[in-house]
Length: 69
Image (cartoon, rainbow, N blue to C red; front, side, top):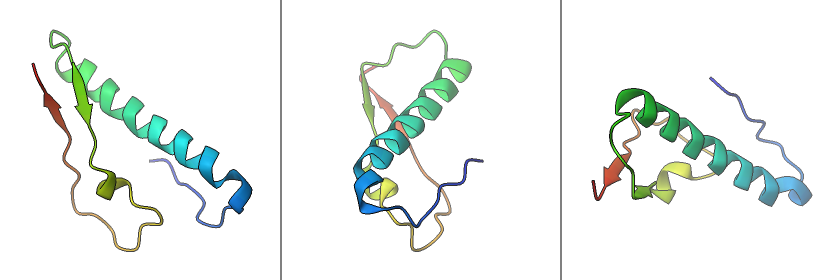
């Protein structure tokens, strides 16, 4: 599990969010490639509400979907 600091300076906030989103997409893609290597993903949809920052309440589950298979 990766821990991210919640007290970031405003200057690096935007770069940090881009990096965080890339990390999330990378994790999703690695799980999909390990689980379903024969499938081709044409569209990856991540609900922006699930990436809300800062996280005020813990999430019980996050659902990702692969569309247009």
